[in-house]
Image 1 (cartoon, rainbow over the protein chains, first blue to last red):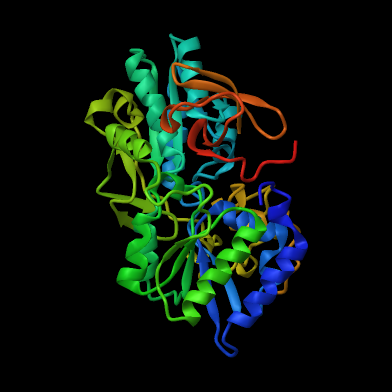
Image 2 (cartoon, each protein chain N blue to C red):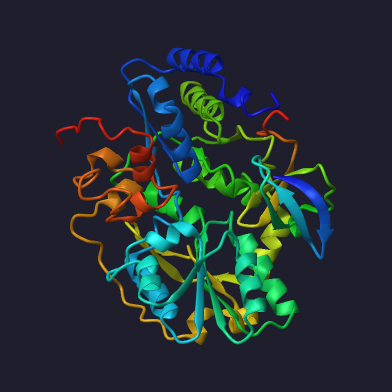
Length: 371
Length: 57
C-alpha cells in the first residue's frame, strides 16, 4: 500500500472491523487509550470508534501539547507579549487559549505585537528582519516539535543573533504516561502509541509500559486503517496473553527513532525538575527548559514572568478529558458554554484537542450518559 | 512533504500535498534530494519516508 487513499479504504476498514469482532472476548470490556492529538483527530474524522464493537472503548489521553498547558503559563506568555518592544510569536492554536484574563489574540487586540508563525524558523526570520525589536517564540509540543525549536536556537546561536528568545513549554511523553498508569482513576487495557513522537524517540522508551505495568502498546500511524490495525494488534496481544511494544507504523517509525534529533535536544535543553500539566498536576522531569549553554535565548531569564499558578475555571473539565476519565460529550459545558467560537478550556481550542475534534466532526449530538 | 529544492545551510524548500512550499530544516535526515519525501513537524524534517501517505500524483 503506497497511497493515502489505500489507507482510507472503507472496504478494508470493514474487513479489519470484522477481524476485531472475532478477536474480542465476549463479555469483556476493553479500554484503550491513545495519547496523540493526531490520532484523536483521525478517530473522530473517520468515525473509527463507530467501527469497533460496543465493548471496545477508545479513550483520549493527554496527547495534545496545547491542551496540557495550564492557564498560568498562558498568563506568563501574555505578560511577555505586553513587554515593551516585544514581537511575540506563536503557533495559531496558542493564540486562542484562554488565560485567566484573556487570550493572546485579545492581547493583540489590546496592542501587543502578537504574530502567528508555522515554525520557529519563521520567528527567527522575524528576529533577523527586526534587529531593533525583541522577538520571543512561544514553544509548545512534545518531542515531535522540540527538535525544530532546538535546531532554530542552534542557528540563532551560530549567527550571533541577540534579539531572539524562546518561552519554552515543551513537554515529554513518558512521564505523563507513567502518571496515568499510576493513577487509580483509570483501568486501561492497552495503549495506542503516538506515531510522530516515536519518529524522534523511537519505540524503545515505551518498553516500560509492558515491562513495569503489564500493558501492551502498539505505535500507530494516522490513517483510519492504521488505527484499526493497531487496535486489532492490541486485542490480539491481550487474547494471546502477550504484552509488548509493537510498531504498526514501521514505514515511518524506526525502533531507535532519530538519534540525531535526540542529540540536538540534549545540546539545547535540559529537564525541569517538575512541570505543571493541566489536569495532571505537577509531574517530575516532564518539561524542557533551555540549558545553561542557551541561557541567552531563554525568555524567562530575559523578561519578568509572573509565574502564578491559576486554577482552571470551575466549569472546566479539561483535566478529566485529558486523563480519559470522561469523554468530551460528558463534560457539562461541552457544546453549550464551551464551543470552538467561545472556548472555556484548551481541549476545545486546539485543533488536536478531543473536544474540538468531537465538535468539529459533528458528533456533539451524542446523548450524555447518566453518571 | 516533498523536497523541491536542495538544502542550503541545512534548509530545503519543500511542498505539501496542496503544492504550498515552505522552508524546512533537514539537518536531522541526512542528505535529501529533490523528489524525496520527508515527514515534517514545525519546520523540521524528522524522517525520510517513502511517500507512505502521499496522494496519487
